[in-house]
Amino acid sequence: MEKYRYVIIGGGIAGGRTAEGIRKVDKNGSIVLVTDEQHRPYERPPLSKKYLREEVEKEKVFLQGMNFYQENNVEILDGRAVIKIDRSHNLVILDNDTRLEYESLMLATGGRANRLPLPGNELENVFTLRTIEDANAIRSAAGNGKTALVMGGSFIGAEVAASLSQMGTEVIEIFPESRLLELIAPEEFSQHVHKLFDINNIRVLPGTVAEILEEKGQSIVAKLDNGETEEIDFVVMGVGIQLNTDLAKDAGLEIRDGDGAILVDEYLRTSDPNIYAAGDIAAWPDTTFEHRLRVEHWDVARRQGLRGGRNMAGDVEPYTALPYFFSDLFDLSFEVWGDLSKWDQTVRRGTLDSGSFAYFYFVDDKLTGVFAIDRPDDERIPMQTLIKERASFGDIAEQVADEQVHLDDLIETEVESDVAPTGEISFNQDIRPLFREKDIEEMKDIAGFDLSNYDDAREWADGIYSTLADGSMPCDGPWPDEDIAKFKKWMETDFKP
Image (cartoon, rainbow, N blue to C red; front, side, top):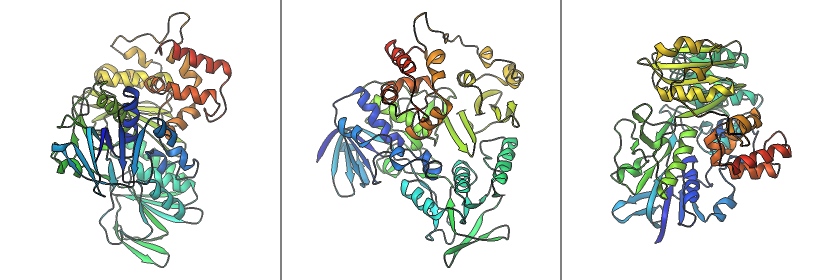
């Protein structure tokens, strides 16, 4: 039996970031990460976008190079499944009967892709998308002259449909809702996306599901509930995930009825103080919205992994980050902050025709989230601040709709000036403008952090500086020496905001 100070179960974003968070606090405590995949921890967002389209190689998808784990003494047991947690003896038992003793345990088990229970759902060319292998299989089936049926009208379905179209595949997209992104976007925006998909030759069939899939030679015949029959080369089901919380449930941890999420406190601890949970599976008490949230997005998993790892190692602070995610559909890139699980009215800033706009979401008169497309950088922070303040509809609705009104002027809380004292370098004034939009999107989509975000830039400053200095980042050319020196000076002046 091996003994470890820290055991991590899960090889996705949350698990990988947990190891990094631990090592930022505890340089020596033994760490083992167990994953049932045959890979070290990797990012999932590129699987439906740039990796699927072969715009980035597999090595770019991994959170860290293998040397990071070797140099930081993080042991990875890949291709191994955990079958039981024995809380009475602080043991994790693997599928080969190996026993790992832990002091602190992180559950970052994520979820598995849903496969709709219809006849033919296990045919050879019927895919889901959750792993590198899934993306590889879809990529092999796609291409010029191929046809695909994509099931699902939320983010995964929409992203896969867009990527397949860009790969030359003829795409039909079906889903039971009345419009694309219905659960998160106003109808006006959904119609905007419908037009974008139509321009790119994606046939969108709202309110439509498949009843049966049948094999026909090398093809698949899909019989739809609208009476149509479609012959396609392959099918992708982008219809959500099932949470991998059976281990937690069997171990007697507190689980929420309904979705089966693991209940954690503000420090991401489960009902067992020696066990933490992060990412898709964790329902935490959110301080902004004053109710529990569970969010299936990259940024939450990334931030919770880091925070959970630091907490496990003794740097204990509550998790208070505002939920955030991003997505790309063709040239349309959007960012979302807050809780958009429900809303009763929205206010638009900007115009769809201009390509630069944002929707402010309200529920019970309080601002609950912002959905932004190509808005000016100086609006990003005030958008988040207004959400955190839970600004009221009556106080800000007219002003946010008026682009002549600066969002900063609507903030009630007194904030620190972005202007650093004379001779000092500030992030917002001096450093953020150095990062080009292409750099920001590439790093956010591939490397797992957002260069336009102060907290991220500070958290990853050493790594960013090293890649600047050796010319390997940004992606569209090396920085001038004077800009690299400015970044270094910012690091040396205690990371002024």
